Length: 288
Length: 335
Image (cartoon, rainbow over all chains, first blue to last red; front, side):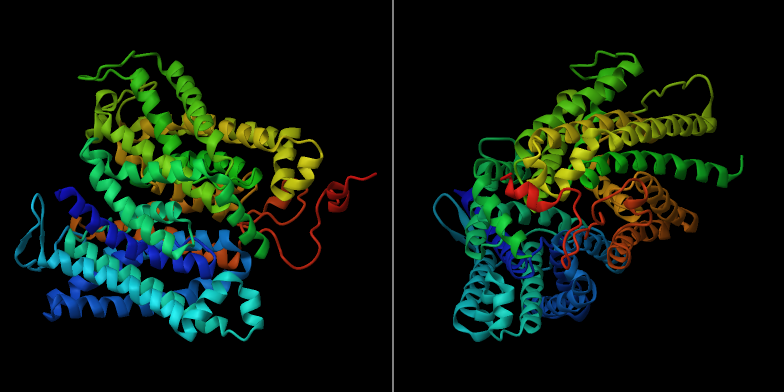
């Protein structure tokens, strides 16, 4: 069924976008609304590199990811670090301010018209009642590879262990000799980079437009809530599930309600198990 | 009439509307500690309730064409009911979960309005709406009538909120915000008080909404994107969370700065470029205020004795908290 293919495509890009968001949420301790604008910046920069430098989509995407990842680290030092002591709410509203500033700058710098990546998806592979192109398979492959690489990084390297240590208990991690500042830089690099990667993938599959950041942060929030805000493996599953749910929902309800499914998922998840989520939130607050 | 008079009138009108919204948000966020991100949704409910109940709309299945005043009251009541429906389940959640849920509700409301074209005419919206006292004055003079309406509304909202702030209900809200355990131990019904604040804010937002409709002269779903929520929040943060007059001052400053960019417009080419500066101004203002003056321009402690700083980063971690109720008494309970 073609909708399942669409759902897997939506879901895998959403999973990449959300996993970076969840990583930042877990180690830095706040919901970063600007994550959607990092995604938008990645999509625009990738297109810019392709069009003005004439490089291949892979190189353009790679450059965009690195550029946004570096920007993520710099912005964290300039905007978030000075207000870190004031708690998650100040950080949250600072990220809203940052999202607005980036959104405006994005519109000043790049052509805000709706455009598509000049890519060729290759030949169609027949799957019986559905079909998928080679290009779409590559997108799914990149999404899967990035998530697997993140898992290997978190479980098999010293830096990855540090990231998990800071996520679990920042004070204890610092006492045990984890270099918290370095770890925070690494988290921002990976988080912003993954956002940009998701932006390039979403741009390649669909179009690049000025509202791409806001539209996606809403879906990222939905996937993050369904998966459990800071739970990295939970949000990967939730991203895939939500992508499938949105694209399969078009079979039974009008297409216009595709996005509503994501918000309904937020509301239903939060209302069905508030105790569980509440205890997690409460514990974080007490630590902070 | 000179252009600058019209400009100032427009800025004051917008500042009044956003100021009233920010005051309602202040009731929730500043005093009750409810970080609501659903303002745009309730504002849409109020605006659409008013238009559907009062306007003469072709090709729509439900349009009772009530008188304007009845429409304003009904808009307030309907929005309050919707606020209660959102509040009842969401108020069980805390912190960022509450914010995300209210945000999601606002988006769902906007999607419903867009897609239920039967009574809302969907994304094309409804334009050329009638306004109160429309036939008394003509053309550009109407801007002054609208400003008059806004001033009356702002004063009314201000007086209601000032009374609320001083009332036992207002004190209970602030007590809940500062020390929930202590307030609970003193016999305050936490959820009930918070729901009351949430619904009262909804009522105010719903009754302000028709003024915005009159200002725009039309209504369509895209008016009610999350920008409304974030601009209101920025006005509140700039002015000073928890303060009585802060939200008004914040809205006035924010609107003066963002609307002033219209003066810079030279030609149509640059117009979109200039428009891009709105979000940059809002974003930078929010970041700068949070960094350098988190209690806002008019700190709350001038209005009434506060237990501790009420800015966004209110709770200062070091040192014992100076709470109104000694924590030992509240927690211990064994006399």
